[in-house]
Length: 226
Length: 213
Figure 1: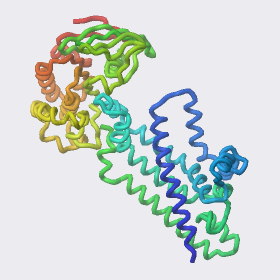
Figure 2: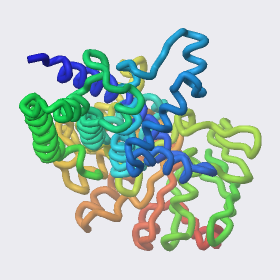
Figure 3: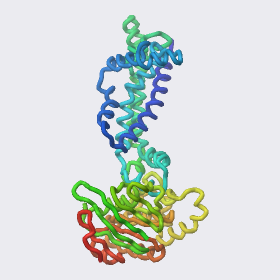
Figure 4: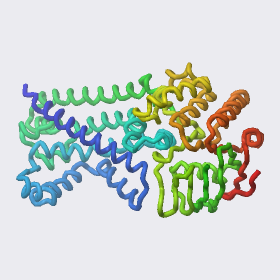
């Protein structure tokens, strides 16, 4: 049996999650500590992929990254890189749909603890960078991990936007969800069933682990406000 | 010496204060919402005033439109109302947080003495979540003094303590004041506490100092 869809899915979801974790963490920290005109609009934009059908996201991405799209055109002319119908496209699609989950978890995590903890560190002479790594990040860590796991699961299960931007090319862009759909369409239900079972196991493990993670004993120091 | 002359428009009133503090303990006394914490935050550099200046021992911490040192460069010790101890690290790491590694050789003895005076040696390896309110208060005090600040700010530091602990902490503050010889500003709305601890008392109401005793 060809396991390539599984490895491809894991590779795409892992790369997407690493980028989304960094982007979601920093943007959430920035948004929870700043106020500026248009903040609500930006916040809504960050969360938009959560409520839009993935096909709409896929259409918008095609518009940006297609051969004649704003970014797609530049990438093609300057670097001779084509995004559409490659596994990069699947990474981009996964990133966009999973970003809101990371962002939302991170915003909640950075809002949960007392701001005076950061202020105390500033008065003690710590730079912004040091405060972030020694105070904000460790205190937000449980929430950040929750976001990380959720966005990984979401990236792994991405179908609509991936299909629109990356297409279904066996061996190149056939992620698990796409492989399931096209196996069923080709009448190969046994093959589809194997993929379905793998997806369910990964999904279940994710949620189960996450629930346990939230009750781990070391959190008693972090979970308290002071 | 601390010289303060500040203005800031707040939601319900304008904060407008002017006072000086020598190497003494001055009480900021007033009801909740009278601008006491706002004033401390401006002195610490956590909040920006609109007008005026803050001078501390020959240094200008703030001068409207010209100087505005960030909190990191003010060298001000701040004991927050809820202590703001970092919950994820031990008491020892809390205390040493403000000391840069190159200062450590010089600060070691001073800190050990401070820890002895306040009597928190047995707490060093514990987490803030494992110690009592009175102990937290002492740790917060040591942490704020660890890096030898030029000014100490304390925002209702005893409000969460029971009577016995409060009296003990009063004694400690009076003792440290003698030893330290820096300006100390302490916020309270307890009248007995104010008259017991303060060399002088600034009464605040709606952002103004209405009386000085």
